[in-house]
Amino acid sequence: MEPTVLHVVSLSTGKDSEATLCYALETQPRDSIRAVFADTGNEAEEVYEHLDYLEQSTGVPVKRLRRSFDEEIARTRARLALFASGEKVDTRGHEDGPKWTKEAAARALELLVPTGNPYLDLCLWKGRFPSRMAQFCTQFLKTEPMVEYQMDLIDEGHIVWSWQGVRRNESERRRYAREFEEVGGGLFIYRPIVRWTAQDCFDAADAYGLKHNPLYSQGFTRVGCMPCINSGKDDLLQVARRHPEHIERIAEWEKLVASVSKRGLASFIPDPDRDAHMNKRGIHKVIQWARTGRGGKTYDMFRAVEDEGGCSSSYGLCE
Image 1 (cartoon, helix red, strand yellow):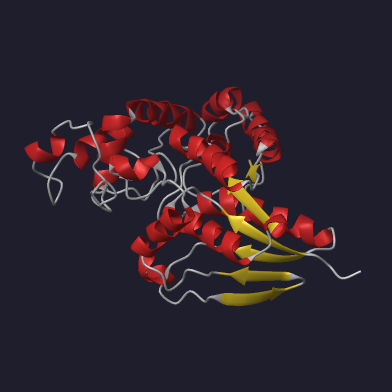
Image 2 (cartoon, one colour):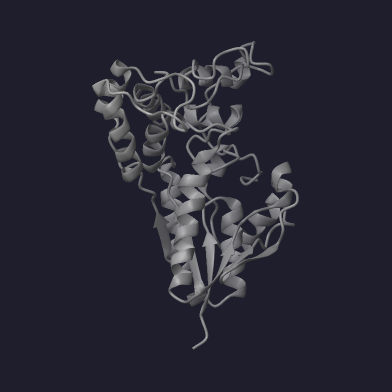
């Protein structure tokens, strides 16, 4: 019997992945399509609601993946217990920067327990938040769960085409993204929209009769994490204005991650001021910075104006 070809579409509910799903639905047998969403645990409610909408509108079930860090946290707790007991611990290959004190290890041991939220548990295990230079959130929360899911399908005897909504003009890093790659072992990578523009993606969803993620109409330029560590001033302001509960959630996360960190400090978004320590700015101060003009020194009255009504799409979706 010949192996079945399955088309696995990585879905984030953003414009690019939605357009990729539309393209798959137009070109491939519906029963061969698998839509997969990697749930980071740091998402807006609109993302989950749009997932449900896409599932109902297309008839394609969406597989939700959530990474567990229970084992990693258990191993870290075992090491912390040794530090907390005062025993001499071999730290070669494990420790860099500040060393664990007996008191700090005891404090971390008390608070370092799995919460069930993938993003928070990852940061608790690492003792820090991701950064642009160490963006381990993508690896652990999205890439690895997606690869594991596809490898399981291959082990079941399928050939897997991994559909990725990547566009070359989206960023300099993706400028040379290839449209097709044969990884081997029955796995292929397909990026059908590499030459598309953002408007092409919106047009594809329109042509298929699908609505766009409502976050775009709220002024967000990206609809991934809420917020993302790569968020700029505009997106950070939109989060603060429209979803202040997420800012408060991040503030609580900062306190918890700091409590299990050797440094005793943790900031979700590093301080834009290179002269300041990266962990000395909390999310509330970052929002204050987002209200400033270029250079981050002068308060911008126009940026700070609260305007939550109506559509403020950066892509002209309300015209």
